Amino acid sequence: MDPAALCAAIVLASSTGDLKLYDWQQQNACEYSEIIIDSAKDGGIDPILLAAVIYIESRFSPKAVSSADACGLTQVVHHYSPYSCKELQRPHTAIPEGVRMLNAWESYLVKTKRSTRLESVLACYASGRRCRAPRYVRAVKWVRHKISEALTR
Image: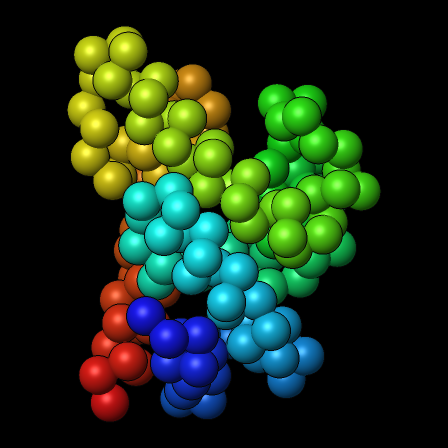
C-alpha cells in the first residue's frame, strides 16, 4: 500500500463525514501514513486496521494520554511497555509499539488456547486480559470498513 493512498482514504472518509477529524488530525494521519504502513508490514498486520486502531484510540493525536495512563497514537499503557509515556508520544515509537502489543495479545490468546480471531485480539488490546470490549471492536471494524471503502472510490 502507498502512503499517499492511505492518506487520501482517511481524508476522503473524513470529508464525507464518515470519520470525524479536524484538519490538523487529517494532516497527522497523512504525515504518519508511511510509519503506519511500514510498522504494519513489519508486524504482519493490515495497515488499514492499524490506521483504524489509531483513529479510535487517539484520533491521530500523538500527545493523547488517557485516564488509564495509556499514551500516544496507539494508546499503549506505558506500565506494560518498555517505553515511557513521553516516548510513546513519539509516532515512531508509538506506532510500532502498538503493533507489538496487538501481536502480543494474539500470542497471549494462542498460549491460553482462546480464539485468535481479530475480534478477540482487538478486545484484549482494549480491555486487557478480560478481553471483552464489544463496542470497541465494532468501532474499529467500522472505521476499517470506512477507510477501505474510501480507498475504492
